[in-house]
Each structure stands twice: as C-alpha cells, then as structure tokens.
Image (cartoon, rainbow, N blue to C red; front, side, top):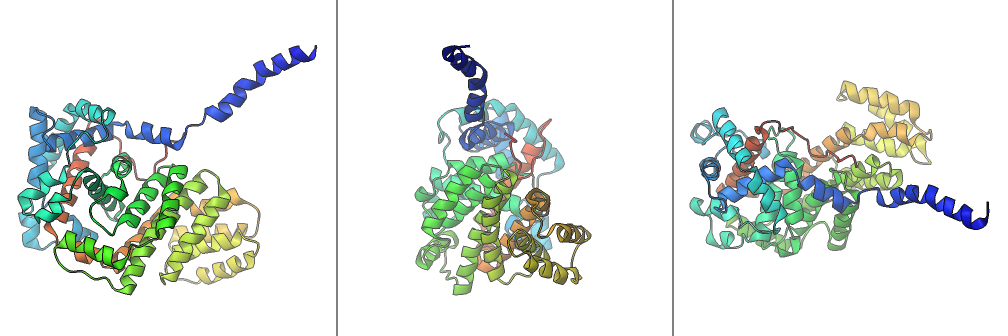
Length: 424
C-alpha cells in the first residue's frame, strides 16, 4: 500500500474519532442553554409574565391573583431564615396558600407554559421588572422601588431564590434551573443597589458550580478575586440604608464574616465541581482555600476536620492526617456516617487512591458543609438581622415561595435539588 493510500485510510478511520473528541463534548455555555430551556423555567417565566401583565388570559389572572394575595405573609421567610418562629398572631394572620390554591396555581401555570417558553426564546429582557408590582402596594420607599430596573430585579430575585433554596431546613422546592435563569440574566455591574457585587458573583459561581459548569463558575471566581470578597464599608452601608431605610454600620468582625461567606460559597462549590469532573488537583486547591477560610473563622465542625484530614492524607505528609483522624475518633459529636467515613479514610490515608478518598468529599457531604458554614457566617455578618423586619423582604420571599410551590405541583414535575448536573 503506497503512502498516499495509507494516508487516506488513516483519515477515513481516525478523523471521526478525533472529531468526536474535540467537538462531541458540550461546552458549559451549551449545557447552560439546554438546562434553562426546561419546563420549570417556562413555568417560572409564565408566572412573571402573569404578574407583570404581559400575558392576558384567565390563567394569567388566576396566577397573578394568587401570587399577589400571598405576597407579604406566606411563610415569614426572613424570620425562618433567622431561625425565629413567627408570632402566633402573625402566623394566624398570614395569607397562606391552601393545598387547593397551590394545585390551582400549578394548573394555571401549566396552561401558560407556552407563554414562558416564548419569553425564554425571545429577548432576554422582554419582561418588565416583577418586584415593583409586588412592592408598590406595600408602601415600600419610592427610592428603592425606582431602582428596581431589570438588572436589579433579576439580582433581587436571584438572591431570594438562592437563599430560600439554600436554607438548611427549607422545605420549598426551588428548581436549580430557575436560580440559574435569574443569576445568568443579571449583570452585577448594572445593579443599582451598591455594596453587594462580590456576593452576587459568589452566588452565581455557586449556582453554576453546583450544576456542574466548572468553567463558567471559575470565571466568576476569577472576577471575584480581582474585585475582593467584600465591598468598601461605605458602599455596603449605602446599600443597606437603601434596603432598610435606616443607617446600618457593620463592625469589622461582621465585615469579615461577609467576606468569609463570599469565599466559602465560591471555593467550596468549585471544589465540588472539580471533584465531580475528576480534576483532582484543582479540586484539592479549591477545597484547601475553602477550609482555610472556614478554619480562620474558628468554626469547630467535625465535618470540616474530616475534610481537612482528607487533604492532609492526600498530601506528601499524611502523618498530619493520621494524627487528626485519631483526635477526631475521640469526639462525641460524630454521626454514625461520619465514623464510618473516618474508618474508611484511616484505611486509605497516605495511599495513592484519589478516586477512593474522593468518596469522603462527595457532593452531598461537601454541599451540606458549605451550606452550614455559609449560614453561620451569614448570621454572624449581621445582614439577616438588618433585613429581617423589612416587609418588602418578606414579600419577595413569599413570592418565590408561592411560585416554587405552584411549579412543584405541575403534573409530572420532578424535583431536582440544587447541585444536579446535566451529566453531559
């Protein structure tokens, strides 16, 4: 066989395989587009269209009436986030959606699903801001309402959806696709409430990373590194004054917690994402940064020590990990599952078995630790306390709660926890 024929045969046999290797794998941008074009996002956008009067039908009126009726009281979301119980009188007076109402909301959203799909496929900012419709009847300060343009509306809903979903005891079914929709439609540079750009970047990095989009999440982390984990105190105070209508000055300790929760969200979720892709080195680096921030804060959580032991056992000095594991074994606050993992890690410590030890930092465990540490810093930061009594904050929380409940009742709608990956 001459050289020309051999070359031709090589091209015929091997080029398709090479092409699949280069072009068969989806980019994060492609994954994101596919994930957003989902029933849950269509239903969510249908709800926003109904609320902002851009959809005129009986179903739209049914959706709007239910959402407006519930805004301002459904679950007293902010008090729940603070770990506080609503007063009996408040709980009794709160306009709640009955199971029948929730089912009715879901049915009306289902009938409007084509409207939501059309919104998604059209202009990215085709809908007017939703929050002014909710907040104006509550007598919210005109200065705040006037700043709720499209970018700021996206940002506020993104934060509300993410916080309701992230709360450790939240029963609210918020689909990750919806959080991603608001997060990726938001431009932090255009948000008209100052002081929170680092936190918006961190939340977006978290939502992307926990959905398996490591490359996009890493870009957010790089932008955050360039900006810094916390805004200038004067900017943050200005933003809090706009949100609360009063002077709020955070202490140096509280500002440290604001920066810490920003880094914890970002680096912890990057670790989850990289480990999920078997990018061990990048995962180890992100996990190390996450642990450094958590440990500087003095949070004594046994799960954090197990994760630190993992990094030490994977290093060139596993003796530190073995010593830490012995100390951990004496603790009385370890769960049975943690003790099993402790034994598992003891057997592997110092051995070159990255895939085996990665079981200890699986997505579920690390995800729970990220949430616990983040909420601890959020409580320490003073932000929940500053915003806790704001009627408009409750209204926004109630809106996303009700909409999430309605979407969950749509026939055939399967619940997906934040952090689900496309598997592509």
